[in-house]
Image (cartoon, rainbow, N blue to C red; front, side, top):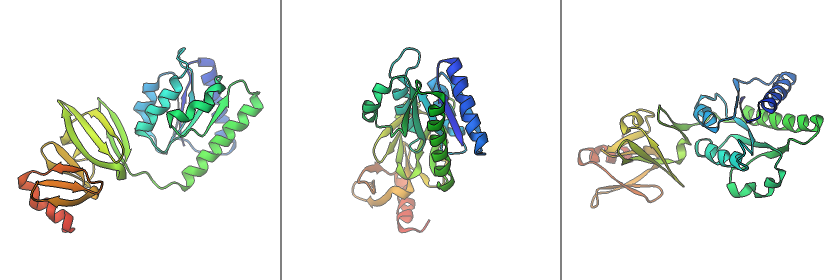
Length: 244
C-alpha cells in the first residue's frame, strides 16, 4: 500500500496518520510508506515512487483555499488515473459538486463524525483499497521523472511525443495533451515500444496503423498523422509488416 495524506493542520494530520497506522496494524496491511504533507507538490513529486497504486486522503480546504483539495485531485489524475481518492473535510456541502471535477473520488469523510464512525469509514476505505491492490494487474505506465517534471500515463493511452517549444515536449494521448519539460533523447530510451520516427517525433509503435507514402506521414490507429524522416521510411514499413 502507498498512502498519501494531504492536511495542513498538523494535529489533524498526525491523528489521521495514527488512525491509518492502527488500521494497517489491525489487519496486517503492508505499506511501503505513508506520506503526510500540507503541500500538494510533494504528492505529485512522489507519485512515481509508489510501489503500489496509491490511495490519497485529501483535505478539501488547504491554507484557507476552500476547494484546494478538489483542484489537487484533478492534478493527481493527470499522473495517476487508477489511484483511490478520498476527501476528508468539514465541507461536506462540496460532496454533490465533486463530480464536476471528474476525479472519481471513492467517498467523503466528514471530520465532524465521532471518532468511532470516522474510524469505520477509514477502515472500509483501506480494506477496499487493499482488496483492489491484491487483484490488480501490475501497472504498465509511461513514466518520466526528471528535475523538471513528473509524468505518469498508462502506456496504452500514449500515441506520440513531440517537441513543442525549446526544451518543452508535448505528450499526445488518446484523449489529452500533457506538456512537460525534457528532451526527446531521454524519452526514446524509456521503453522499446517507443521509436523516434522523426527529428521532432517519437511514436508509440503499438499505435501505428499504416504509412501514407504520398504524404510521407505515419497514420495512427486514431487517425492522427505524424511525419517520418526519409531515412526511416523503410524501417517504419518493416515495423508495420511485423518484421521488427
